[in-house]
View 1 (cartoon, rainbow, N blue to C red):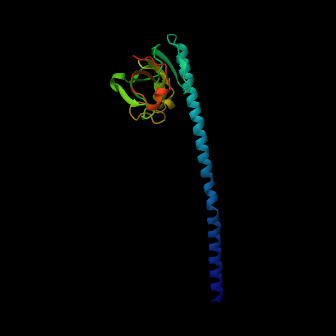
View 2 (view 1 turned 90 degrees about the vertical axis):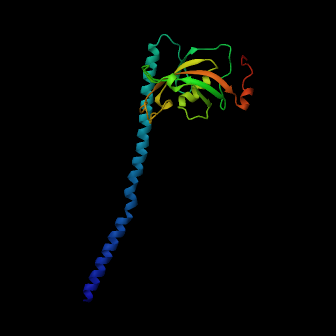
View 3 (view 1 turned 180 degrees about the horizontal axis):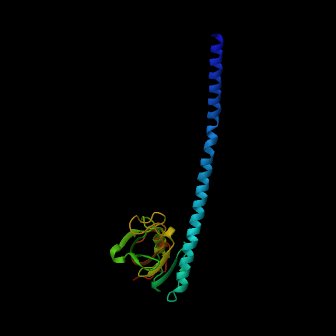
Length: 199
């Protein structure tokens, strides 16, 4: 009887010891998850770089085939050409200015996604509106009365999510943008230029 109690104690001790050993190994089993997460982000960055390179190559090909327009390269990562310029005006919109713009959205093959008539004239405060990234910086290149066509890689358009309507995932876009008016300048913008043509 006494031996039976000792045997049960030994079995219980052995089970507890096995349980402790197994539970001690649990944190190590979780480490590969962290490695996979890091690997996922690394691969995601590589995919994005490859996507951007492919889009830029496609855009450069379109530019090379377009002999009618003189394209300029923006430091923000897109290309554009003017269709209407004003050589007398010098002021371009600054952060906080209130502007009126008109624009359309097309695919790079020129098929219309949203026409300028459908979008209509938009009044907004520069750098304060939730517009697609390319448009937010593109408007700062125009003077009142000017129009330009912009070719945006998808990251400067609607990116990975699209617009959840007509623009899908990772779609480069083309947009013709007109700066119709500058309704109000930010308080500090009057000191940023002294050479604007007053109409």
